[in-house]
Length: 424
Image 1 (cartoon, helix red, strand yellow):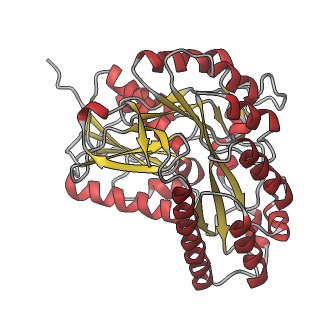
Image 2 (cartoon, helix red, strand yellow):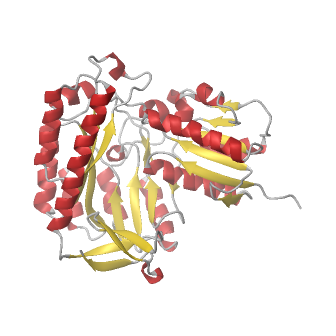
Image 3 (cartoon, rainbow, N blue to C red):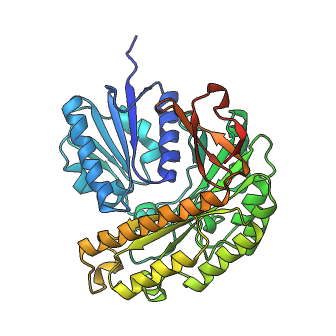
Protein backbone atom coordinates (compact mmCIF):
# COMPACT_ATOMS: atom_id res chain seq x y z
CA UNK A 1 0.00 0.00 0.00
CA UNK A 2 1.37 3.44 -0.95
CA UNK A 3 2.38 5.59 1.99
CA UNK A 4 0.18 8.65 2.58
CA UNK A 5 2.04 11.88 2.01
CA UNK A 6 1.87 14.42 4.80
CA UNK A 7 1.36 18.18 4.51
CA UNK A 8 1.79 21.09 6.90
CA UNK A 9 0.60 24.69 6.50
CA UNK A 10 1.76 28.08 7.68
CA UNK A 11 -0.32 31.22 7.16
CA UNK A 12 0.94 34.79 7.05
CA UNK A 13 -1.38 37.79 7.06
CA UNK A 14 -5.09 38.31 7.22
CA UNK A 15 -8.23 36.41 8.21
CA UNK A 16 -8.91 35.82 4.53
CA UNK A 17 -5.66 33.89 4.25
CA UNK A 18 -6.60 31.77 7.27
CA UNK A 19 -9.93 30.81 5.65
CA UNK A 20 -8.18 29.90 2.38
CA UNK A 21 -5.45 27.88 4.12
CA UNK A 22 -8.10 25.87 5.95
CA UNK A 23 -9.88 25.15 2.66
CA UNK A 24 -6.63 24.08 0.95
CA UNK A 25 -5.94 21.79 3.90
CA UNK A 26 -9.33 20.09 3.62
CA UNK A 27 -8.86 19.66 -0.15
CA UNK A 28 -5.54 17.88 0.32
CA UNK A 29 -6.86 15.76 3.21
CA UNK A 30 -9.77 14.65 1.00
CA UNK A 31 -7.19 13.65 -1.61
CA UNK A 32 -5.37 11.41 0.86
CA UNK A 33 -2.80 13.70 2.45
CA UNK A 34 -2.20 13.50 6.19
CA UNK A 35 -2.24 16.90 7.89
CA UNK A 36 0.64 17.66 10.24
CA UNK A 37 1.51 20.57 12.50
CA UNK A 38 3.96 22.98 10.91
CA UNK A 39 6.66 22.21 13.49
CA UNK A 40 6.44 18.49 12.68
CA UNK A 41 8.27 16.70 9.87
CA UNK A 42 6.11 16.64 6.73
CA UNK A 43 6.53 15.65 3.08
CA UNK A 44 5.06 18.95 1.88
CA UNK A 45 5.09 22.41 3.47
CA UNK A 46 2.67 25.04 2.16
CA UNK A 47 3.22 28.69 3.06
CA UNK A 48 0.28 30.99 2.33
CA UNK A 49 1.81 34.44 2.11
CA UNK A 50 0.80 38.04 2.61
CA UNK A 51 2.45 41.04 1.05
CA UNK A 52 0.86 43.98 2.84
CA UNK A 53 4.17 44.87 4.48
CA UNK A 54 7.84 44.28 3.78
CA UNK A 55 8.02 42.19 6.95
CA UNK A 56 5.77 39.50 5.46
CA UNK A 57 8.23 39.01 2.58
CA UNK A 58 11.14 38.63 4.99
CA UNK A 59 9.17 36.24 7.18
CA UNK A 60 8.45 34.00 4.19
CA UNK A 61 12.19 33.72 3.44
CA UNK A 62 13.00 32.92 7.06
CA UNK A 63 10.39 30.15 7.18
CA UNK A 64 11.75 28.53 4.00
CA UNK A 65 15.27 28.56 5.47
CA UNK A 66 13.93 26.92 8.64
CA UNK A 67 12.28 24.15 6.61
CA UNK A 68 15.49 23.60 4.65
CA UNK A 69 17.46 23.07 7.84
CA UNK A 70 14.83 20.79 9.36
CA UNK A 71 13.73 18.74 6.35
CA UNK A 72 15.76 19.38 3.17
CA UNK A 73 13.98 16.62 1.22
CA UNK A 74 10.50 18.06 1.76
CA UNK A 75 8.62 19.93 -0.95
CA UNK A 76 8.04 23.63 -0.31
CA UNK A 77 5.05 25.38 -1.90
CA UNK A 78 4.52 29.14 -1.73
CA UNK A 79 1.14 30.64 -2.51
CA UNK A 80 -0.82 33.77 -1.59
CA UNK A 81 -0.32 37.45 -2.35
CA UNK A 82 3.48 37.50 -2.30
CA UNK A 83 3.49 34.55 -4.72
CA UNK A 84 1.26 36.43 -7.15
CA UNK A 85 3.23 39.67 -6.95
CA UNK A 86 6.79 38.34 -7.08
CA UNK A 87 6.79 34.75 -8.41
CA UNK A 88 10.27 34.90 -9.97
CA UNK A 89 11.79 36.39 -6.83
CA UNK A 90 10.27 33.62 -4.72
CA UNK A 91 11.34 30.90 -7.17
CA UNK A 92 14.95 31.96 -6.58
CA UNK A 93 14.75 31.29 -2.81
CA UNK A 94 16.76 28.10 -2.21
CA UNK A 95 14.44 25.23 -1.30
CA UNK A 96 11.25 26.51 -2.96
CA UNK A 97 9.79 23.91 -5.34
CA UNK A 98 6.46 25.40 -6.44
CA UNK A 99 5.04 28.92 -6.65
CA UNK A 100 1.26 29.15 -7.09
CA UNK A 101 -0.31 32.47 -8.05
CA UNK A 102 -3.85 33.62 -7.29
CA UNK A 103 -5.48 31.63 -10.09
CA UNK A 104 -3.74 28.35 -9.25
CA UNK A 105 -3.72 28.05 -5.47
CA UNK A 106 -6.98 26.06 -5.47
CA UNK A 107 -5.48 23.65 -8.02
CA UNK A 108 -2.77 22.68 -5.54
CA UNK A 109 -3.69 18.98 -5.54
CA UNK A 110 -3.09 18.66 -9.27
CA UNK A 111 0.24 20.50 -9.05
CA UNK A 112 1.53 18.35 -6.19
CA UNK A 113 0.84 15.16 -8.14
CA UNK A 114 3.17 16.41 -10.87
CA UNK A 115 5.95 17.64 -8.55
CA UNK A 116 9.14 15.93 -7.39
CA UNK A 117 11.99 17.20 -5.21
CA UNK A 118 14.98 18.13 -7.29
CA UNK A 119 12.99 19.40 -10.27
CA UNK A 120 13.63 23.03 -11.15
CA UNK A 121 11.25 25.38 -9.32
CA UNK A 122 7.89 25.47 -11.04
CA UNK A 123 5.97 28.74 -11.31
CA UNK A 124 2.26 28.63 -12.05
CA UNK A 125 0.91 32.14 -12.24
CA UNK A 126 -0.85 34.46 -14.64
CA UNK A 127 -1.63 38.12 -15.23
CA UNK A 128 -3.91 39.28 -12.41
CA UNK A 129 -6.24 40.88 -14.99
CA UNK A 130 -7.09 37.41 -16.29
CA UNK A 131 -8.33 36.13 -12.95
CA UNK A 132 -12.06 35.52 -12.64
CA UNK A 133 -14.16 33.16 -10.57
CA UNK A 134 -14.73 33.01 -6.84
CA UNK A 135 -13.48 30.23 -4.56
CA UNK A 136 -15.52 30.06 -1.38
CA UNK A 137 -13.43 29.31 1.71
CA UNK A 138 -13.90 28.89 5.42
CA UNK A 139 -11.77 27.83 8.36
CA UNK A 140 -12.99 24.79 10.27
CA UNK A 141 -11.58 22.90 13.25
CA UNK A 142 -8.67 25.34 13.36
CA UNK A 143 -10.30 27.94 15.60
CA UNK A 144 -13.49 28.33 17.60
CA UNK A 145 -14.34 31.37 15.54
CA UNK A 146 -14.67 30.50 11.87
CA UNK A 147 -13.64 32.84 9.08
CA UNK A 148 -16.04 32.67 6.12
CA UNK A 149 -14.78 34.24 2.90
CA UNK A 150 -17.62 35.83 0.94
CA UNK A 151 -15.71 38.36 -1.22
CA UNK A 152 -12.32 38.62 -2.92
CA UNK A 153 -10.32 41.21 -4.87
CA UNK A 154 -10.64 45.00 -4.90
CA UNK A 155 -11.55 47.67 -7.47
CA UNK A 156 -10.15 50.50 -5.36
CA UNK A 157 -6.77 52.06 -6.18
CA UNK A 158 -5.33 53.23 -2.85
CA UNK A 159 -1.87 54.58 -3.55
CA UNK A 160 -0.12 52.44 -0.90
CA UNK A 161 -1.77 49.08 -1.63
CA UNK A 162 -0.68 46.03 -3.63
CA UNK A 163 -3.79 43.94 -2.92
CA UNK A 164 -5.59 44.65 -6.24
CA UNK A 165 -2.41 43.49 -8.02
CA UNK A 166 -2.28 40.37 -5.86
CA UNK A 167 -5.97 39.39 -5.80
CA UNK A 168 -7.55 40.98 -8.87
CA UNK A 169 -10.96 42.53 -9.39
CA UNK A 170 -13.69 42.64 -6.77
CA UNK A 171 -15.87 39.55 -7.00
CA UNK A 172 -18.13 37.70 -4.61
CA UNK A 173 -19.88 34.53 -3.65
CA UNK A 174 -23.65 34.47 -4.12
CA UNK A 175 -25.87 35.04 -1.10
CA UNK A 176 -27.39 31.61 -1.70
CA UNK A 177 -24.03 29.86 -1.51
CA UNK A 178 -22.81 31.94 1.46
CA UNK A 179 -25.97 30.97 3.37
CA UNK A 180 -25.41 27.28 2.48
CA UNK A 181 -21.87 27.49 3.84
CA UNK A 182 -23.14 29.14 7.04
CA UNK A 183 -25.69 26.32 7.42
CA UNK A 184 -22.94 23.74 6.89
CA UNK A 185 -20.83 25.43 9.56
CA UNK A 186 -23.80 25.48 11.95
CA UNK A 187 -24.19 21.69 11.62
CA UNK A 188 -20.46 21.37 12.41
CA UNK A 189 -21.00 23.03 15.78
CA UNK A 190 -19.58 26.44 14.88
CA UNK A 191 -20.93 29.19 17.13
CA UNK A 192 -19.36 32.31 15.59
CA UNK A 193 -18.68 33.27 11.98
CA UNK A 194 -16.39 36.15 11.04
CA UNK A 195 -17.28 37.41 7.55
CA UNK A 196 -14.12 38.11 5.56
CA UNK A 197 -13.13 39.58 2.22
CA UNK A 198 -10.63 42.01 0.73
CA UNK A 199 -13.25 44.75 0.43
CA UNK A 200 -16.18 43.22 2.26
CA UNK A 201 -18.61 46.12 1.85
CA UNK A 202 -18.24 45.82 -1.93
CA UNK A 203 -19.90 42.39 -1.78
CA UNK A 204 -22.26 41.61 -4.64
CA UNK A 205 -20.17 41.82 -7.80
CA UNK A 206 -20.38 38.54 -9.69
CA UNK A 207 -17.52 36.01 -9.92
CA UNK A 208 -16.70 37.13 -13.47
CA UNK A 209 -15.46 40.46 -12.11
CA UNK A 210 -18.40 42.40 -13.56
CA UNK A 211 -18.46 45.89 -12.06
CA UNK A 212 -22.23 45.78 -11.53
CA UNK A 213 -23.56 44.77 -8.12
CA UNK A 214 -25.89 41.81 -8.47
CA UNK A 215 -26.52 41.68 -4.71
CA UNK A 216 -25.49 43.84 -1.73
CA UNK A 217 -23.65 43.30 1.53
CA UNK A 218 -26.71 44.50 3.45
CA UNK A 219 -28.80 41.81 1.68
CA UNK A 220 -26.21 39.20 2.71
CA UNK A 221 -26.25 40.33 6.34
CA UNK A 222 -30.06 40.07 6.49
CA UNK A 223 -30.08 36.54 5.05
CA UNK A 224 -27.27 35.23 7.27
CA UNK A 225 -29.11 36.57 10.31
CA UNK A 226 -31.84 34.00 9.60
CA UNK A 227 -29.54 30.94 9.68
CA UNK A 228 -30.40 28.61 12.58
CA UNK A 229 -27.55 27.40 14.77
CA UNK A 230 -25.13 30.28 14.32
CA UNK A 231 -25.17 32.35 17.48
CA UNK A 232 -22.75 35.11 16.53
CA UNK A 233 -21.50 36.95 13.44
CA UNK A 234 -18.78 39.55 13.15
CA UNK A 235 -18.00 41.81 10.20
CA UNK A 236 -14.21 41.55 9.94
CA UNK A 237 -13.43 44.92 8.34
CA UNK A 238 -15.52 47.32 6.29
CA UNK A 239 -14.65 50.59 4.55
CA UNK A 240 -16.34 53.64 6.15
CA UNK A 241 -17.85 54.72 2.82
CA UNK A 242 -19.46 51.27 2.44
CA UNK A 243 -20.71 50.96 6.02
CA UNK A 244 -24.22 52.25 5.48
CA UNK A 245 -26.70 53.55 8.05
CA UNK A 246 -28.90 50.55 7.18
CA UNK A 247 -26.15 48.10 8.12
CA UNK A 248 -25.42 49.92 11.39
CA UNK A 249 -29.12 50.06 12.31
CA UNK A 250 -29.61 46.37 11.49
CA UNK A 251 -26.64 45.30 13.64
CA UNK A 252 -28.02 47.42 16.49
CA UNK A 253 -31.29 45.41 16.39
CA UNK A 254 -29.82 41.98 15.61
CA UNK A 255 -29.22 39.40 18.33
CA UNK A 256 -26.68 37.58 16.11
CA UNK A 257 -24.52 40.33 14.61
CA UNK A 258 -22.19 41.41 17.37
CA UNK A 259 -21.89 45.06 18.47
CA UNK A 260 -18.37 45.27 17.05
CA UNK A 261 -17.05 46.97 13.92
CA UNK A 262 -13.56 47.20 12.48
CA UNK A 263 -13.38 50.25 10.23
CA UNK A 264 -10.15 51.24 8.43
CA UNK A 265 -9.29 54.94 8.76
CA UNK A 266 -5.61 54.96 7.66
CA UNK A 267 -5.15 58.67 8.46
CA UNK A 268 -6.92 61.40 10.40
CA UNK A 269 -5.59 64.06 8.00
CA UNK A 270 -7.75 64.84 4.97
CA UNK A 271 -4.59 65.87 3.10
CA UNK A 272 -3.03 62.43 3.64
CA UNK A 273 -6.33 60.64 2.89
CA UNK A 274 -6.34 62.38 -0.50
CA UNK A 275 -2.72 61.35 -1.17
CA UNK A 276 -3.68 57.80 -0.20
CA UNK A 277 -6.58 57.97 -2.70
CA UNK A 278 -9.07 56.93 -0.03
CA UNK A 279 -12.76 57.40 -0.89
CA UNK A 280 -13.86 59.45 2.12
CA UNK A 281 -12.77 62.25 4.41
CA UNK A 282 -12.41 62.12 8.16
CA UNK A 283 -15.76 63.88 8.67
CA UNK A 284 -17.57 60.85 7.20
CA UNK A 285 -15.61 58.54 9.49
CA UNK A 286 -16.61 60.61 12.53
CA UNK A 287 -20.27 60.44 11.44
CA UNK A 288 -20.14 56.63 11.24
CA UNK A 289 -18.62 56.33 14.71
CA UNK A 290 -21.15 58.80 16.12
CA UNK A 291 -24.12 56.85 14.74
CA UNK A 292 -22.74 53.52 15.98
CA UNK A 293 -22.25 54.89 19.47
CA UNK A 294 -25.67 56.55 19.47
CA UNK A 295 -27.41 53.25 18.63
CA UNK A 296 -24.97 50.96 20.50
CA UNK A 297 -23.09 52.83 23.26
CA UNK A 298 -21.47 49.52 24.28
CA UNK A 299 -20.16 48.75 20.75
CA UNK A 300 -16.47 47.96 20.26
CA UNK A 301 -14.84 49.78 17.34
CA UNK A 302 -11.41 48.93 15.92
CA UNK A 303 -9.44 51.19 13.59
CA UNK A 304 -6.66 50.56 11.05
CA UNK A 305 -4.10 53.39 10.82
CA UNK A 306 -0.96 53.84 8.72
CA UNK A 307 1.82 56.08 10.05
CA UNK A 308 4.74 57.54 8.13
CA UNK A 309 3.00 57.75 4.77
CA UNK A 310 4.97 59.90 2.27
CA UNK A 311 4.20 63.58 2.78
CA UNK A 312 2.99 63.09 6.38
CA UNK A 313 4.35 66.06 8.33
CA UNK A 314 4.45 66.38 12.12
CA UNK A 315 1.28 68.48 11.84
CA UNK A 316 -0.47 65.80 9.74
CA UNK A 317 0.44 63.15 12.31
CA UNK A 318 -0.82 65.40 15.12
CA UNK A 319 -4.12 65.73 13.19
CA UNK A 320 -4.36 61.94 13.13
CA UNK A 321 -3.44 61.54 16.81
CA UNK A 322 -5.86 64.23 17.97
CA UNK A 323 -8.66 62.91 15.75
CA UNK A 324 -8.28 59.37 17.07
CA UNK A 325 -8.01 60.67 20.64
CA UNK A 326 -11.35 62.46 20.21
CA UNK A 327 -13.19 59.47 18.71
CA UNK A 328 -15.09 56.91 20.80
CA UNK A 329 -13.14 53.97 19.38
CA UNK A 330 -11.85 50.98 21.35
CA UNK A 331 -8.51 49.95 19.85
CA UNK A 332 -6.14 50.63 16.94
CA UNK A 333 -4.25 48.38 14.53
CA UNK A 334 -1.23 50.52 13.71
CA UNK A 335 0.82 49.87 10.57
CA UNK A 336 4.14 51.51 9.77
CA UNK A 337 4.18 52.53 6.11
CA UNK A 338 6.56 50.44 4.01
CA UNK A 339 7.37 51.02 0.35
CA UNK A 340 5.72 48.52 -2.00
CA UNK A 341 6.80 48.05 -5.60
CA UNK A 342 4.57 49.43 -8.37
CA UNK A 343 2.44 51.60 -6.08
CA UNK A 344 1.68 55.28 -6.69
CA UNK A 345 2.87 56.21 -3.21
CA UNK A 346 6.48 55.76 -4.37
CA UNK A 347 6.13 59.01 -6.33
CA UNK A 348 4.97 61.05 -3.32
CA UNK A 349 7.54 63.22 -1.56
CA UNK A 350 8.97 63.89 0.93
CA UNK A 351 9.67 60.41 2.30
CA UNK A 352 9.27 60.14 6.07
CA UNK A 353 12.47 58.88 7.79
CA UNK A 354 12.12 55.33 9.11
CA UNK A 355 12.98 56.32 12.70
CA UNK A 356 10.18 58.92 12.61
CA UNK A 357 7.73 56.29 11.29
CA UNK A 358 8.59 53.99 14.21
CA UNK A 359 8.23 56.78 16.77
CA UNK A 360 4.76 57.64 15.41
CA UNK A 361 3.80 53.98 15.52
CA UNK A 362 4.83 53.82 19.16
CA UNK A 363 2.73 56.88 20.05
CA UNK A 364 -0.40 55.41 18.44
CA UNK A 365 0.13 52.01 20.03
CA UNK A 366 0.27 53.72 23.40
CA UNK A 367 -2.96 55.54 22.54
CA UNK A 368 -4.53 52.23 21.54
CA UNK A 369 -3.61 50.69 24.89
CA UNK A 370 -5.21 53.61 26.74
CA UNK A 371 -8.32 53.45 24.53
CA UNK A 372 -8.78 49.72 25.23
CA UNK A 373 -8.24 50.22 28.97
CA UNK A 374 -10.82 52.99 29.03
CA UNK A 375 -13.32 50.97 26.97
CA UNK A 376 -12.91 47.93 29.22
CA UNK A 377 -13.25 50.00 32.39
CA UNK A 378 -16.53 51.44 31.09
CA UNK A 379 -17.97 47.91 31.26
CA UNK A 380 -16.60 46.77 34.63
CA UNK A 381 -19.33 45.08 36.64
CA UNK A 382 -21.48 44.49 33.55
CA UNK A 383 -22.54 41.02 32.46
CA UNK A 384 -21.74 40.31 28.81
CA UNK A 385 -21.72 37.14 26.71
CA UNK A 386 -18.32 35.51 26.10
CA UNK A 387 -17.42 32.77 23.61
CA UNK A 388 -14.46 30.84 25.04
CA UNK A 389 -11.96 29.39 22.59
CA UNK A 390 -10.26 25.99 22.75
CA UNK A 391 -6.77 27.34 23.36
CA UNK A 392 -5.05 26.34 26.58
CA UNK A 393 -2.08 28.50 27.55
CA UNK A 394 -0.50 28.35 31.01
CA UNK A 395 -3.67 26.68 32.32
CA UNK A 396 -5.74 29.64 31.07
CA UNK A 397 -8.30 30.05 28.31
CA UNK A 398 -9.45 33.14 26.44
CA UNK A 399 -12.59 34.38 24.80
CA UNK A 400 -14.20 37.59 23.59
CA UNK A 401 -17.28 39.39 24.78
CA UNK A 402 -19.90 40.33 22.21
CA UNK A 403 -18.29 43.80 21.99
CA UNK A 404 -14.77 42.38 21.66
CA UNK A 405 -13.26 42.67 25.11
CA UNK A 406 -10.76 39.87 25.67
CA UNK A 407 -11.46 37.73 28.75
CA UNK A 408 -9.02 35.32 30.41
CA UNK A 409 -10.13 32.59 32.79
CA UNK A 410 -8.74 29.37 34.30
CA UNK A 411 -9.11 26.61 31.71
CA UNK A 412 -12.40 24.73 31.92
CA UNK A 413 -13.04 22.18 29.18
CA UNK A 414 -16.81 22.49 29.64
CA UNK A 415 -16.68 26.16 28.61
CA UNK A 416 -14.97 25.53 25.26
CA UNK A 417 -17.04 26.75 22.29
CA UNK A 418 -19.85 27.86 24.55
CA UNK A 419 -21.34 31.34 24.85
CA UNK A 420 -21.28 32.12 28.56
CA UNK A 421 -22.59 35.03 30.63
CA UNK A 422 -19.60 36.75 32.21
CA UNK A 423 -19.25 39.66 34.60
CA UNK A 424 -16.38 41.88 33.48
